Image (tube, rainbow, N blue to C red; front, top):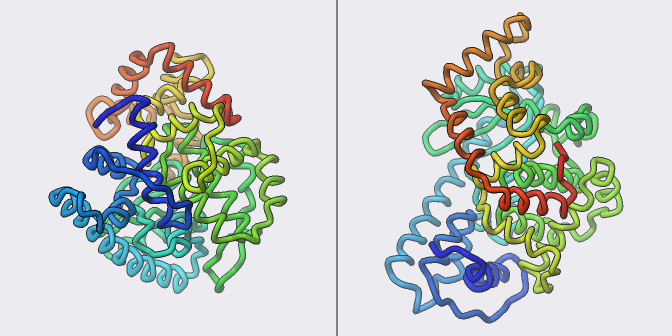
Length: 386
């Protein structure tokens, strides 16, 4: 795939212009010059479904690319149908078991798009009462799921094409956000005895926080900006004064305003402010889930003690983080050094071998690249946020 600023000026502008009118944005006349690069970009940002819908009636769309993109769309549609069905089963089982839960992210956003196939997601996310962690895990196994690993925030479960993430925390590594959500259940709206939802304002705030996490850690892409555009146009009565007051209280007002501006630039036809061009380049270069090199550089930049401190924090996470990932540690906290040792062994020989990859990546990040990333974080108010 082509790289460089010329890609943003041409293919990315074309991609954004093609998908904008599908989701209520401004229609602009564009000429497609490179269908293959356009398709690769769309896949990178998880908007291939939208690109296919925009191009399916274009007689110049090459037949092989058309067939491949159509296959991607139908595969994602089948996955979404399976997700919706399985989500219903899991939600029903949680209610019967008396476990409080909150559907989150894509499954809430999807109905706001003009058609459900326009918003795909790789999994179903829900937040639940962490006091029921053991019972919730047993419930998922009883429904035919297999555990797919856990971290400090969630445990994943898979069955066939369906992936479900049960979040026992909304966030870790961000103390300001942890404190903000300390008493989340009291702020939720009950839909039944055990199923809850957020108000539109609180859902938008959480979505902004979730996007911030990806942006500040490894990067986030076009779809996150499109979610902002779709949500705000679907909810014109949103109490923005409340939203901005809450986001200001946790230091994310500038980040929110940046996303809002970029959503109107990408999909609403506004001109790009010159000072946001580096932020836009960061987003367009990140893809849906960011880049590993950016994750390492951004994390090292906020670590106490520089890169040495970063490697120490990655090799020896604090008890709070380790206990979330390994609940058995709570039974005997003094065993923390043994859990660290196990982590290092897995890093050398097992699933956590990525730690050695992080060392190599951190050493390869140039001073110029670190300066660029620091400048992006400064512009959106996230420098040192963690």
